[in-house]
Length: 476
Image 1 (cartoon, helix red, strand yellow):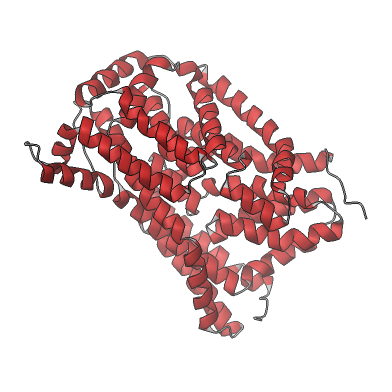
Image 2 (cartoon, helix red, strand yellow; image 1 turned 90 degrees about the vertical axis):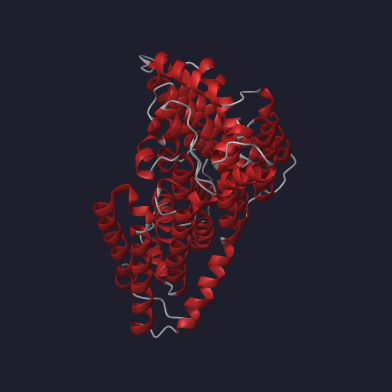
């Protein structure tokens, strides 16, 4: 086994990464995810590998093996991202999202929109077990409704993400929930019940914040609502029949069909709806005036993989209904690949292990134990760029420590979820942060201050540990 590096050596790649990311953001702003951040991650990886090979004589084959393993673990995630791109394009062009927006902006009150969006996403995510699916479907529609109601996209995205991650965290169908319980050796439903002690209070505070914040909305929205209703009704065949696709998608989710299959099947169903109800839009996308089999096929193919632009007669509405298909996910996939390579290098060199050992040494009591677990979970999200890796590593690092301290495994599983699961979406180069910012079209750092559930969850976990509410030691 390779030697564990000294902590002062292990922290160097992280400092380099943060430094290059700061430079990329300063030079490119929100466009840093289009290349600058990728370079920063590769530079951090290069420093990590160089130090390990020169100072500790770690052979390259160790890094190569870990990179292959890590990239293999995210291969399904990359396919899901491509399917999300297909789904976002097909749900828009088929009229599904326009129909939801058309009726939603006439029904939903601006004052209660934020709190309603948060609760709706929480329920959908709880039933589906997937924050990604929730945000890519109902989340996109709610963002459009909020845009029409004149509500800040940052606030709307915050409400959507807060609700989606609450439901994902509490759902027995969620892969992260299952992973956290299994990685720590905790029964799934024991894990979920114990999470309620921190998650329910956090969600109630979040709901109150969005309720109070939304009371000031509503002025001046009527004109924009009318513009959107007229533009959507003029361009799309608005029909409740389009909602058959979301209903069938929900049925597939209820049957526990894998996410990849659900997203792909839903995209195909939406494509069929587009051929039936929106052939004129497919012709416009294909840049042909006369409908034909080849024209419609070309328009549908572009909808799935490329950029679409539909002229509704309203500039803001044109921006809202434009899509980027699978091509729109390529920057995200590129960034994920670079983030995974950096994380793999940190794992293979044992530099992450070195840094976390320092944290473990400072544990003195219950609060410091939970605080260290939270801090490590967030740190792993930053350095590995993936919540699944963060959950597994966090569990591996602290499992023995919790046993030695005499605490139940459910405390570790809950704390891991309170940190690693919910904060992943707040980090621009993490798979979750990259995906949700791409799907919603809102930069991670823009929506971050408004993701109250995600920001408060780690703090609530530490607070509950500080007061010792229902935290028990195992009986010998």
